[in-house]
Length: 349
Length: 235
Image 1 (cartoon, rainbow over the protein chains, first blue to last red):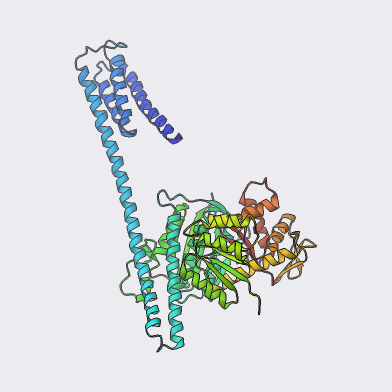
Image 2: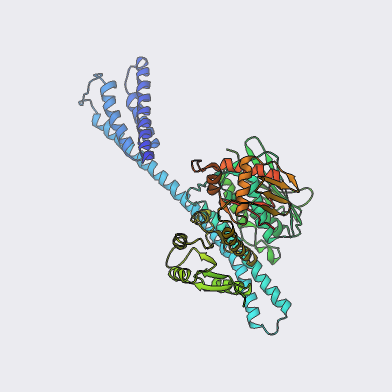
């Protein structure tokens, strides 16, 4: 593996760099001081830094051995001769070795703990998502089951109209479930581990067009307009994921804006980024949830009618992770004219 | 007695299979069902259906395998039904010779439209065996004149360049069907062109600016994100 080889080279470079620097420093100090007592101390310091900055034990131990030999050879009388008879020599050696080993051990442990902490955080995120999903799935499933049993159990006494209502409920609840599943698929598509995405140059207008088409299939009555600059934009992105972001934003405008009749999508080019705005004329976003809107916190909020238990949480937190994975960002605000404005931007390069 | 088009539905899920049967029979198709790949293969060879609806996830084999072996000896229309949303599977199926794909979940009208398109394509292919498009393609305000190599909108020549015309006429020839990016690039720029989507994107953006009112709300040429392009069916 080339990256492993590279790693070794970097570690060796760090080791010799630090040792070389200290040696040079000692040489420069020599004319100004009579005793050599500072030399071993400085080399202990060097060994400390080597152990701290390299991976594993090997480089620290290597550095301490070189340091012991070097100090003996270069900086202690007789200069440029190895003399094992100096008093305390074995002690210096053992001390340096001990420093190297314990610092390396500490560093390794710190790194491991960092890893564990990251894992735990990821695990927590996954847990949150799972909780959110189970919650968001249970509600529509319950109403599907209720509607279906109503039709089966009270079939004879139901009017044709009532029956149709139940069936329509079933369909719209199932559509909601599909939306959740699609978002989950987006999350798995981002690969979880290092959230690497497959970017290709896409025309932003094609992605918007496709998202609007999907949206229109579900909400044919809502008017959608698109403001596009005349020139072409090829923006590197994972088209499917950005389409998902747009579909989420459009559907949120209707599902949470409640009275939305008109949505406008605008694309604005800036020097190094492309901004996309989704503005609606719905009820807007309540100020108290605005700051944590991307958090994916799906606990049903108090004091709301039961329907809004379907928070926009999962959709928006998925949007946020998608946009972040593209090295962009998102913002939500209320428009002065009423309604909500969601914005995300993507870097052009 | 009327002669109905026969559709083979290859689907391992009984409920979805029932849905297909009910919807298709209600729309005057003759429906045969297969639940496994082996069953499907024997029905394809013995019954020669007019259209095959093929689910890719089968218990005994990968649907792609059936598609491949059918394509070795027949051009019968195959519509791939897939729950996989990953576009690579769609591209692979199309490149293997599937006529179209439809992603679960889908609506009834969408399903029926795809089946009609697939059947119509085999019919016109019989009449027009040399593959050269001739005559007119008309959809709404858009007209492609294959003989004059011109595209008109509301009666006016929109002034497409050579390559732009080639792309539009290629899509028009297979109207209603998705053409993958790679396929279009190979057809227009030849097999040595590397699969760089950029040149196709730029051409497509220019075409849209010439024939669509708003390029982001296309009426004629649609994007299947990550897969390819599709032009509307002619009137």
